[in-house]
Image 1: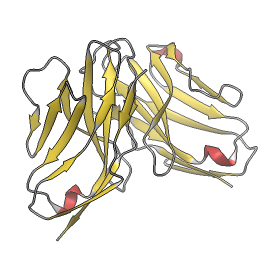
Image 2 (image 1 turned 120 degrees about the horizontal axis):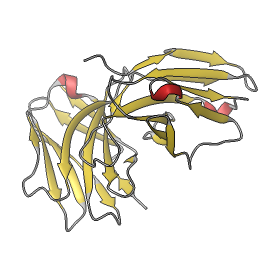
Image 3 (image 1 turned 180 degrees about the horizontal axis):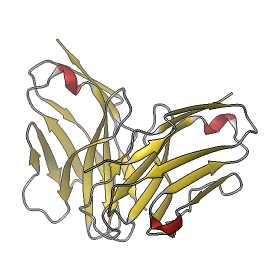
Length: 116
Length: 114
């Protein structure tokens, strides 16, 4: 099966600019996650979708970050305006269903964002 | 709240030897799953092994095994017969029945020496 697809692979922007990331999960996976991974740290959850509804966005900085998953498949994550501290790798992941403690997350290759 | 702790920022192991990467966790969930992921320098997160909180036996997947001690809340990863390609970051993660998002530790960087 095809894996989780993410684009772009790399992005360099100046602070106060906006940027958007795209993710296409594994076919049939109902749950989609966006994680932020700052260099040298573990991934931190930003937002979790179940189909096209938000399950958890408690750690999403909503003053500048937004995410949507229209039609319950593809998802986009946007940052506007970007700050220097947003420099990180943004990982998208998907899993079969919410509620299954035994379901691993399958990750895309990530988007490496550099804010200058 | 869920918390994952990996106390080893970096580990070295000689090729063909075994190595143990430590992970402790804390959760109020009665049911949970523990996972290990490998992240090579290329950046992708690769799922390695899973252990359920009610599993009676320790999980094994090829050269990977999980030393699960529920009372001590530890889930250490054991890699046997290390290979140069095992050099990477390794993350311990947990997913609870009530707190269903997956939380990660800070990771351990493993370097395999020839």
